[in-house]
Image (cartoon, rainbow, N blue to C red; front, side):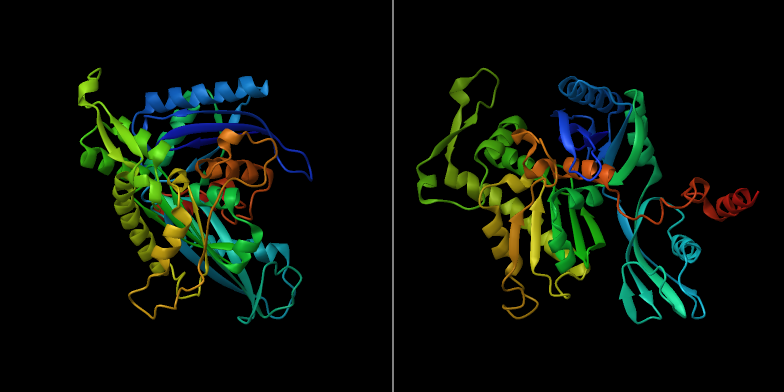
Length: 418
């Protein structure tokens, strides 16, 4: 199988072998810069198509195998989350598979009909409105309920991504929402069970996800990321974005050391081939410049976590991932920022555990792809090897048509009965 991560800064591909009962084994990888995607959506179809074709070919040569279809992630600024709830009366009889199908249909019918639904992931089931269970089958109950989270997006950007992939002569095995893939790629089961917040800081977007009792319970996408840090550096240093990005990647940090004031860095010539225009700054000055946009990004993520109810639920674990998570000193810096709470007592968030999330659960992953920037790609491989329960994908294809309005829904129901 093949996993394809089409992001704002890079396109990457993994070809892996799936062995029953074993961890996925990486056979080949490919990755390169992408110039056709802006904030997760396709902006230049030809450039995106060419990037996809190049990285898949690179991975095929390394794996000595060819692929026909890919699992691909999708994240965009309008990716939204909608809680779905439904209850089915049983009259004291045991819960049968047919009852679950009916319950799932009731829940999915509440999904927004003006967008494309990617997933509907059950958080928990409830027996008689009291007992919370993960699998209600064979329980005797007067009623059984389900609480799920639907992830949806606008249809046009999704179709543009699909078209770009198919123009590269590939089929799409599944489109996986970015937060789902990233969570599977870097979170531990114990963290999801205890409750954890995941902040993926990509190039164009930052995605905030909250997990509780092992399930995804909230998602919010922020239209800011690593590109904003690079742009601010370029403006403040009066240099090209290329030079600013190089400084960020090679020397980026948010916590300074004693030697940073003496460590001088070359910014790069403001004009091509003109070494006389070369400027310098200390690493301490660079760190101070980087801290400001990262601080603003964390403040936005903090507000998102508040809206998602993470702090009110007593959340104590935070995982940072994505390309921007490679900044030196990010863990203590984030712990300091997120433990500040001007709205409540200073001890409210004491003891917050922060770590950087790198890919987990794969064998044979090259060191170059073992950093947090590739957590989503690893999650796509794990999704392919063991997809989570998804009550939306379990429905018949003609019941999963989105953005069709009430008449479209009636036609789907009629076709299902014919």
